[in-house]
Image (cartoon, rainbow, N blue to C red; front, side, top):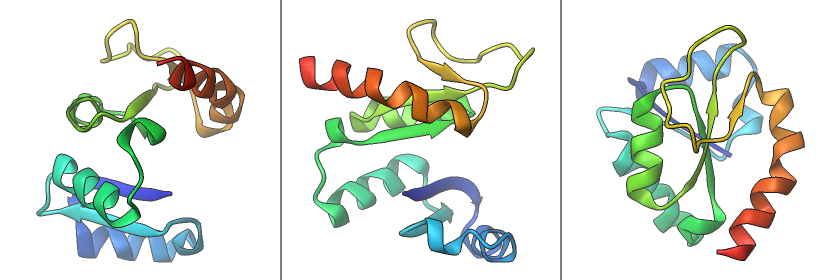
Length: 112
């Protein structure tokens, strides 16, 4: 797992550390790099094919970066909030729902 954010990277790293999340992520990356650049660098460094990777995001820029990079995408949209994503994008209200959705996404990826 990685974090790719538009938040300035030093500030983002402090936030992740302060919340005790550092052990959950292999890397935490932010501005000034763009999300597309961050994703490209992650794919290069991990040597993972884009179609085997998933990005979860809450902003249209997350969806655009994932699409441009060839990653699958799941939108995180809280309950009672309008989705900024195209209707074809799978949605979760929170990260707890993601584990229920993953088998479906794996099946779709393997049929491509």
